[in-house]
Amino acid sequence: MSEDEKRFMGRQGSYGIILDEYEGKYSLNEAKNNNGVIYRDWCYLSKWSKSEGGWIPDEKKRPKGIYLGDKDTAMKLLGRAYNMLKNG
Figure (cartoon, rainbow, N blue to C red):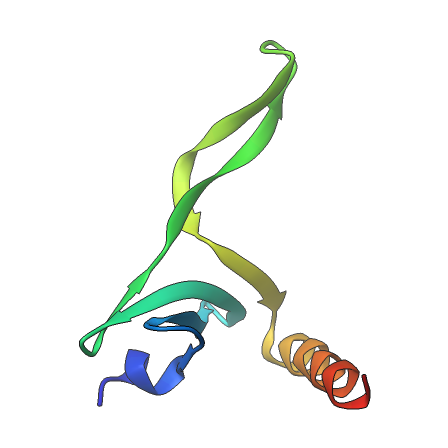
């Protein structure tokens, strides 16, 4: 089992989320498990353009997900989410 497969949490079918770490920052990213190969969904974030008078796509693609911050912050946020789900 690959490291990606260990961090992948499936929901319906082969879709789910994966816990990623990059340079000490954590995120939960949308992903798909295709026969043991994990593919992340990528998107262009939007940014405001004064010259265009509206939102435009950024130049760089990024994984589609929720950015949680450093390890301590990520653990606190996920712990709070867990408690909210558990306690209704």
